[in-house]
Image (cartoon, rainbow, N blue to C red):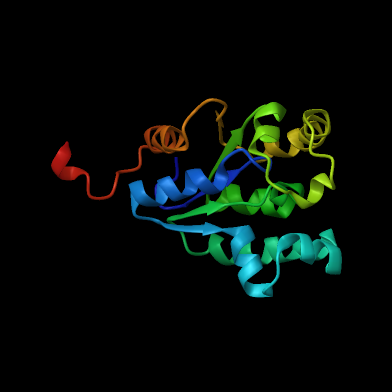
Length: 177
């Protein structure tokens, strides 16, 4: 695996990318970046509002620009918005500048997460979620280097699994070894 590149967490909304990235930050000492949060901060409005006011294509352009920015920096944990993999350029950029980790879960797990997600458009049910996941699956397959199923796993355990698989040293843990 690429030692100095970024770790890109991809996957459908609600699989745990943001939570796992926080644990990875604590364990590695690397900077954590959440593309959705960067967009919200830069535009000073929520993602549902951006979708409503400017449309999905505008939002996807913002994602691509942020990705380009962080791809240059290295040793970052980048928690990506669920649809960032829809663009081929984004997939290529992530693969070139780091390791892409697909976090996956069942539609039922995502449904139980229960958060408001703009692309679900009031269709918060396992069948609709499963349909959307199936539509995106080919893109996830093209983008991923590694896949980790998060169902019934604590986010911290997922973070430890990533560190182990990528053989990344943990920050400040030398004394305990």
